[in-house]
Image: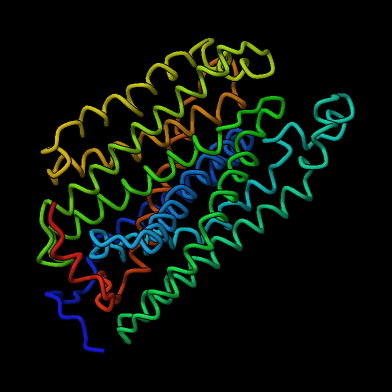
Length: 394
């Protein structure tokens, strides 16, 4: 098979990214250690936000890569490798989970045996909500995610050398098998790590709620890096605004999808008016939490919606970079709104501890990406669909 000819030259990865990632990670680690020494319970809740944020980036990126293979997408091939490298965040999730393991009793009410014995509902959920099964599920989640990532990424990179189309076929099959596992594992991870913070509460679409934010956040991270690296000359010279449009359109679509799921969840629970469900929203409408709830509507939906509403805005690199960073910030706010009311029901808490974990999150994200991308092709030059991807026009 003849080699795919593209106008791409591998360059040394920009050292500024590695330096920024390393500095942010070190500063974040120091602050996180200090935070745990000052208030380990509050820090554990923030650590959970960190875990869910990085899971969104890593697992969401793997989903986007698998989706390309399953759907046979062409437009995304020229920058799929960027998304693949973002998926490497999955490799460090077990390390992020370790502090949570040692603080289970501070985070989850159902881990207290005396509370379970005195509560009929918790006793009924005990076969599922127990520490041993909880840890087993977490290990299975991490194992499956990392295994699928390693297989898909290895085949993709091997194709750069062999230009073997069978590797694409192999990844299509792996991705097809991954999709139902992704849906189930993402849903149960959201239930285990967030919904069980309030073990009396339940929502049948909570997994879909987290899915919408996960894919949107992964898209945002990928979009920013794709545009940044392309502007610096590290990607293909043939990329045009038509390629950017698809990224902007997807972010716009998932912004609307998140709003639809969020409103549906609220409306169905509020209309049914069942005490075991409504208290979740009542807690977020009392005290200072009401301001966070109202702000979330604008931060998570209104601002990115109007910023991406017009067709030109979906193709404007500056606009897309701003919206991408905004969506990453909005996802942090969303996770804070989901998790922290369990720690402080009366009013929201915000201080240097709440800043320490986002610093570490962005540091890990940048550092892992830069390490993974160093000395590697940022474009899948062996993919047989690459030429069609480069020539993609609306």
